[in-house]
Image (spheres, rainbow, N blue to C red):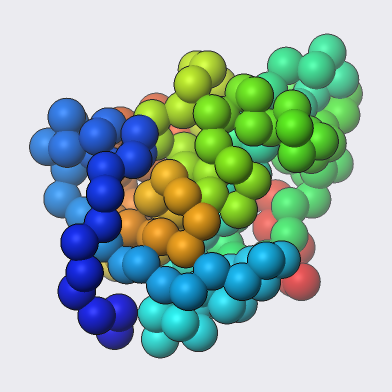
Length: 163
């Protein structure tokens, strides 16, 4: 497991503390374009339990967040069908950053700048613990998946594809 070191507050950890959420902190050495395989390796956890926060948009350019297993991709067709949109696509990094307030690679669903609907792959909610970005590159927090629905009103969807 990651060694204990002081980690400065982020918008995400402030949000979690404000809501008295229980979480563990997991800093790791960030690698550019390393993705969840690097964070899972650094933390010594299964990549399936590392959850990526993806900022996407619908056909009207309305932003939304999708939470997906690190070892899966989002089927944008299935997602669009389930949420009643014509299409869904990833936002360009600079647009995602504007909506979330976070640097791409450090996006957390907690403490985001602009309120957006949050969708979570249903099977994530069945895991005992998940590791999700804590608001900066090289920093994950371990939480109970139930916090996604209680704090973010995340709606369960089924849109995972094998990587």
